[in-house]
Each structure stands twice: as C-alpha cells, then as structure tokens.
Picture 1: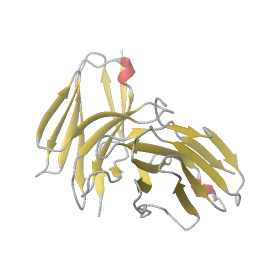
Picture 2: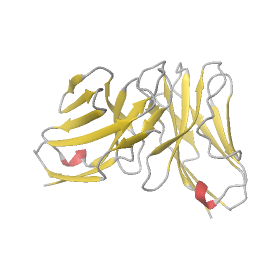
Picture 3: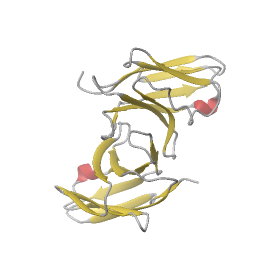
Length: 111
Length: 112
C-alpha cells in the first residue's frame, strides 16, 4: 500500500530551527515534494528532492534518503508567518503523475 | 492568467443535488489534477489529465464523480447526487510535464 507519515503538530519559537520529518512507503518513487499551506489557502510549492541529499533554498532545506524512505524539511530562523501546515508528498513511478500526500504537519510559531 | 483559478470559491448544496466545479489551469500546462481535502485529512487524489491521453480516474471515490477537460485547458468536476460525505475542499492543480504542481485556491463544498 501507499503510506506517508508525518507528525500531526509541532510548536516552535521565533528565531528557532525546526525539523519536520516524513517517512514514506509507496509502490514507486519519482520524487518527493514539500508544500506549505496556510489556513484557508492553496498549498504552495517549497521544495523537491529526487536524489539523496540536501537541497537548500534560503531559510528552508529539504533532505532525502531513498534507501530509508525518509525526508525532512528544515526551517531556520523561524518567523511568525511560518505558522502553517507543511505537506509531504511523493510522486509515484512516473513523472507527471499525481502526488500522494501525507496528512500534513501543523506548525505553530510563537514569539 | 497568473495562476490556477477555480470557481465557485464556495458551494453549498442540498443532499441529492448535482454540482459542477470548474478549474482554469495555468496557460500552457499540459497536466491537470483534481484533489480533495477533507477536515483533518491529507489531500486525496481524484483524477489526472495529461495532454490528449486518457485520464487517470483511479482516485475517483464512486461513479457519482466524473470530470472532463475540454480543449486541453478548462476542466469541470461533476458530482452527482451529492452526499454529506462529499463535503470537502476540492483543489485543482496544473503542471508542466514533471515540474511542481501549482494549486488553485480550491472550492469549499458543503452538502447539507
């Protein structure tokens, strides 16, 4: 079956670093995506990993280990506006196919 | 257009009625996806269109759900004889080949 697991909720304070983990078991793998979704809004793309290793983009970094079926999203220098849900999604065996999403991690950043 | 647009933004209907949800993808994007997001649940894939190929309907939950994409652009998701469990936010996304998917703002469907 297809399964993507991530923590339901996390809390952190402004200026801190937080790591959101995602583990996956899917019938095929052709890339892992992280999306950010503010309440009542559409998901917006954050990062994409298809090879093992770390992808850095400003305050956000994403890591992938295909052998372990594991990824994490690292958020540095947290800001209040980072309070949102973070969605881990895996693309199956073929490029362009639909994504399989986890249930999302709701991050609350406090001052 | 600047992004994916969807209409209506909100739809309230009575159980048993049919509804149509519309999606305008980003111009030039060949792939179009429909997902739904229920409270406390992750995004659930419904249907996928890629160019002129036959759509992947493997995510549609029942035969009450159908979708079409006309002229390789606009798509309509139709739900017949709506049930209360159909209440959710219906999200449309488009992408260019295997690049990231861009999501529309969604249609919040409430079935009374």
